[in-house]
Length: 210
Image (cartoon, rainbow, N blue to C red; front, side):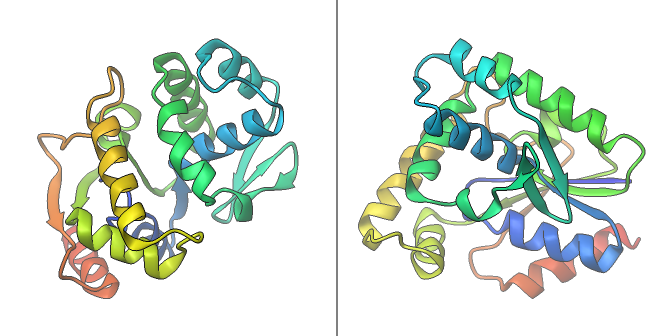
């Protein structure tokens, strides 16, 4: 069973996917963490993030593994290092390379073969798992998503700066030549702007319980 969720940054994908996985007894797979980890190791090794080939080669030099909702690189847990402002601003750019996305997608399909999973990202319903059993697209206003990010972790930035960053990231994600953020024709659309995490979770669980 594969439950796939797409949507823009801050729409609640990760939190809700993790809750659904726990309630359904499935594995939780955060696809975005792989791109964040690749961005992290590239920065640590002073790789030019504007050189897609160099970033891909860097990624291939490392072993990425995922267990219990946490990502490790070469056996070292890096989950707590993946959500800095620097990673936020650069991951969208790094993940825009078609060859890197193909490499990561192949790796994810191989790792999850035969597993019951709940996964989320930007193109999980369109490219990674186009045949997923259930597809959802979470959305929320840019203002609400910025408010959530500011409340969770501002990183020293003001609300206006976070909002500007989210708007810029939305534009980048929706205009990528490969793996662009879009709503799959058969995905169930949910606007989470005025819903609590539990309310969204209940709506999803009702769908998959039918």
